[in-house]
Length: 254
Image 1 (cartoon, helix red, strand yellow):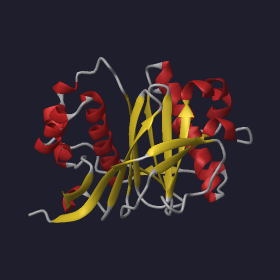
Image 2 (cartoon, rainbow, N blue to C red):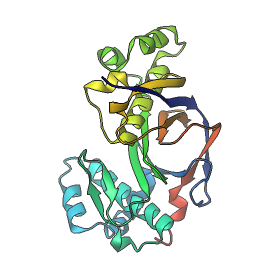
Image 3 (tube, rainbow, N blue to C red):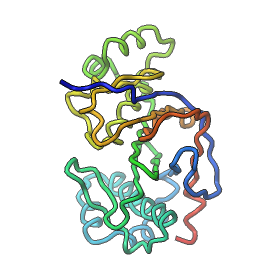
Image 4 (cartoon, rainbow, N blue to C red):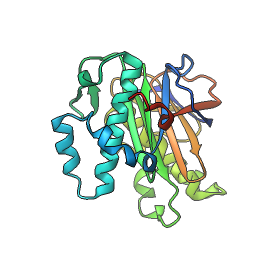
């Protein structure tokens, strides 16, 4: 029998884009970066130099050029962010994967990270504790009805029926669930429907929490085209604004 705990809290916050580099935000225990991928394509030769042999081989396995370029940009900039927070030399930043295939830092186990991408944007979260982040493009052609009954419970389905903007609500619920499973490291499984995503407090089966005990999930609107969510493994607090740093203005010294 799976025990339940009052350990998940979902809310929504506004975001700001701040061009100044900041250390970890004490109130959130995390810092977030935004990447407009198209702006970095001219820097690909420079960024590729920061990938090791294994990472370059991985990039070459992508069939589509845009996927290869995105991997190079995101991996190099993730290393850049980690170096800014740890003081490491970029050559010492090595990623490994745990039993659930979630990446972690080999030589610096007190820092956590997560990356997400959609369309022309990628977001990076760097935190003091496990974190998950997800962003989705508000695709007007996407028919959510094909999957909604497999990913949303009855209460969530009822919320969709009552919603004034069904697609926006669906993406809010979906990104919250995605952010949670990325934070726990358990990924999307048959239990995805049991991951809570409505506003407020939730009881969640312990077996779906992994090693975590408390999760605060924060939804946000990223410009007019993207919906996103961040899952932080800590007790909830009053969070009204999340600041995303613009990485494009921080790579000159990289």
